[in-house]
Image 1 (tube, rainbow, N blue to C red):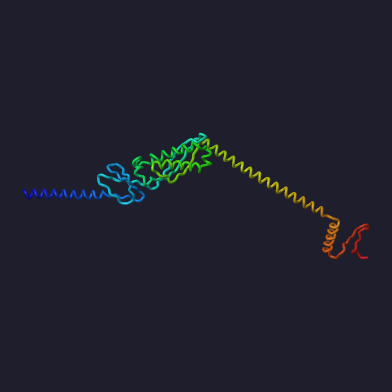
Image 2 (image 1 turned 30 degrees about the vertical axis):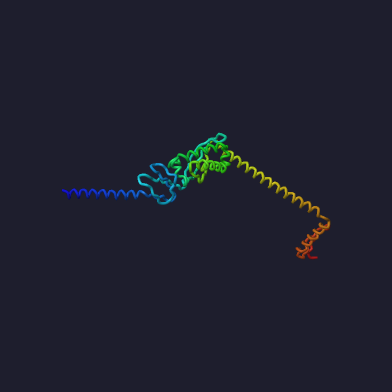
Length: 273
């Protein structure tokens, strides 16, 4: 009986030892956490965030007492649709793209004050609020013609706003501006009218140039005729007559004409006497 009791006690001790070994192994395994590239860690002690941010690598934590929240700090991209009113009270719908990431050195404060859903709680509202404020400073036409200036103003204000939430804005772009159908039709009509006006101006310039060319050509021809008349002299006329006679002689074949005429009747020079 005593031996049996000893075996029970021994088995119990062995079981306890085995459990202890497993527990120690489990605790040892969970005591270390790896922070991968592009991430940071927030150490929590009984749920309270630490003032220290954990960088990339292996970190120790006290099992059952501490835990580590991993936060992705790589650049994220989002597209947001928002509506606003322009300075001249035109309804404007805009689609914008934002690239952002949490400030790696302040993720503990971000987690403590906002949490992991900071994109929906900070980015979206900030973009919509800044868009409304900036768009209200421009007319609908200026939003089209000064689009780059509008973009830069929005980006500057958005950067200043987001940094207060420990989020860094990497890039901002306006994907599209949309207006009411009436305003869009008016813009298209204006562009068509401007294009027609440009074409008419070009046609007018072309006609003017062609007319000037014809005038110049006519003036040149008139001047040529005037010079020719001025240069006609008796000597020149005599010279032209001599040139014509010379050419006629060159063409003569040496035979007298069969008939000749004048004051006397025509005679047949080839008839026998």
